[in-house]
Length: 120
Image (cartoon, rainbow, N blue to C red):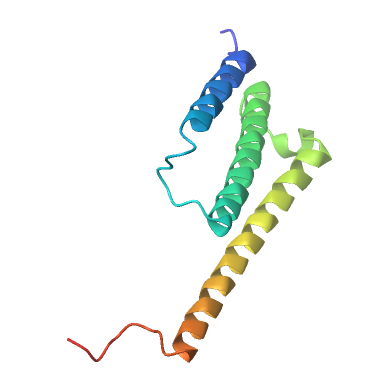
């Protein structure tokens, strides 16, 4: 069985095509575009890319070892460090987002701008 090879040129071509389409459609956006939204989406995208690369490295290691034995000992230290760092950063990002949401809910309630619960 011949192992499959990555096709970086196909990926790069698809990314270029999508970027070009985004440039063409920049005047009529499909989603709300604000600074917090872009920052949140950017952070989530970065985490997803890093974690996908880590999963790809782990799957390649499992393929090379045949799924037998402890492949974690064969991984370079930087892979383990990157995985742990990515997980911690995602946790921090989620906790910060939750804290910001809570702070905004409390601020809205302080200004009596909450939902009208006694009206029908």
